[in-house]
Length: 289
Image: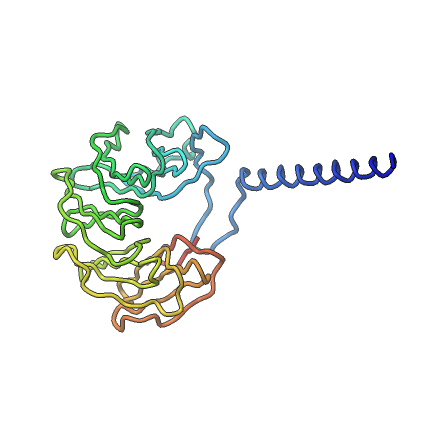
C-alpha cells in the first residue's frame, strides 16, 4: 500500500513538474521576441521597447505621425509615443507614456489641429490629447464599445466605430464636439476610405457584409454581402485596381472585394484568425496579421 502511495505521489509530482516546465516554456515563448523571417520588400531593423507595469501587455492599434509612432495598450489603457526616425533605434528612455483607463484601442491625429484622438471601450469615450505633451485635453462620450477610429481628410472629421451599439460617431476636431451619429446596421470592425469616391467602406463583423458610408450625407448609402467571408476583421484598399482586401476571422481567408462589381471575386487561404490587413501600393504586397 505504501509503495502504491509513493508511486502515485511520484506520478503527481512528475506531472506537476512537466506542467510547470511547459508553462515556463510557453511564457518564455510569449515574452521573448523572435526574429522575423526575411522578406523581399522589408528589412527588419529591430524592436522598439515599450514600458509596461505588468507581465503581459495587449497592444492594439498603432499610427505614425511626423516621425513618431503611437501605440495603444488595451490592457492598461496607456498610449505610447516613440521616435522612429532615429539611428540607432529608440531605447525605452525615449518612449513617452500617457496613462489612461482601459481599454485603449484606435488612435488618429488630425493634421490640421495637430490633436490626437484615442478610443476607450470600457469608458465609452474618445479622449482628445496633445501628442507633444502627452496630456488629455478633453473627453467626449460616445456610443458603447468605441474601437476603430479614422480621420476623414475630405470632410475634416474624425470617424469613430462603436461595435456594441452598431453606430458610428462623427467628431469635429475644430470644435472638439460630436456632430452626428450614423446607424450601421451591424457590428463595425474596420474601415477604409476611398479618395476617388469619398466613400468610407466599413465591414460589419456579425453580418459578414461591407457597407459604403457617405460621411457628408451622414448615412450608409449601400451594402453588400461578403460571400465566402465569415466574421470580417481588417481591411485595406487598392484604389488603383478598385479592390478591398478583407481578413475573414472565422474561416481563415483573405477576401478580395471588387469595388466596381460590388462582390467578392476571390478568397485566399491565410493563417488562422486574421486580424490586421495592410496594402503596400509601391511593391505591391499585402500583409495580414
